[in-house]
Length: 166
Image (cartoon, rainbow, N blue to C red; front, top):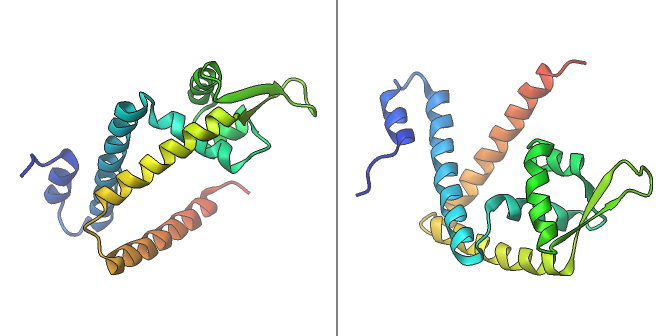
């Protein structure tokens, strides 16, 4: 049995009354494990990173392209985080950057054929990793967990909407 990770130790250390913190740490532990596996696989198979996959995924969804600001917003990161990834993807001819026709100060990033091909390969590997990691979840467990997480997301969004200034 592998060593227990920090998240498992922290969850066990919390009293049952702190159920919300226990849920959060358990979710974070799951996310971290999956992300670590994806990072390793992308590095090994493609000599690439998860942020590159994320940028390509966003651009696949928006074939007309995204500005750097839109791309950062979709990925929920800063423009600074996106800039280096886009620069390297451009050097590898996976994306194209051009000035917006509407506003010459704005750069629009679009996917190239080479970028689409890379994304398709990475996406197939991504799906394979998820299948491997979640293989022991039954169909019923998967459905139940998905429904629960969607409900949690809606409740979090509701709290966040109340916090936003009007």
